[in-house]
Image (tube, rainbow, N blue to C red):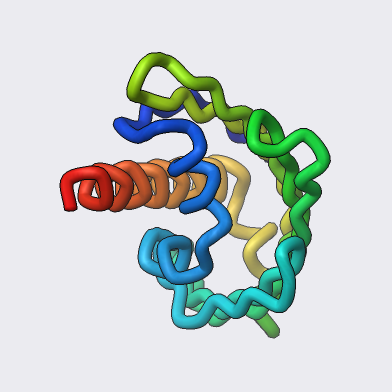
Length: 150
């Protein structure tokens, strides 16, 4: 499964990059996120509850960041396990570009799923993934606007 999009965030690039590395902000913005632990600047652990079609599961996962090109580009990869519901692994390439007082965030993500989730069908999974990504980025953009207003 692949997802790609471009989002305009009303905040400077440095602030957007800092927020993308702030576990508290990410936890607020990730749909269903119960816990997000930052073990280091490049390692995160998450617990997320998701409902995809008829399957509801609690996923535990680990995410690793590669910040070599930061703050302009960075990548992340991770894997999660939802017990009987299945498992997922994937990654994303993220690019941040300054555009005046705003930032253009582009991402290109790929994921593989297995277990019960994979049996639901690619249309349902793809549609749910798009909705979750859109919800995350809307929450993230709103959070950034609230920070710049405050």
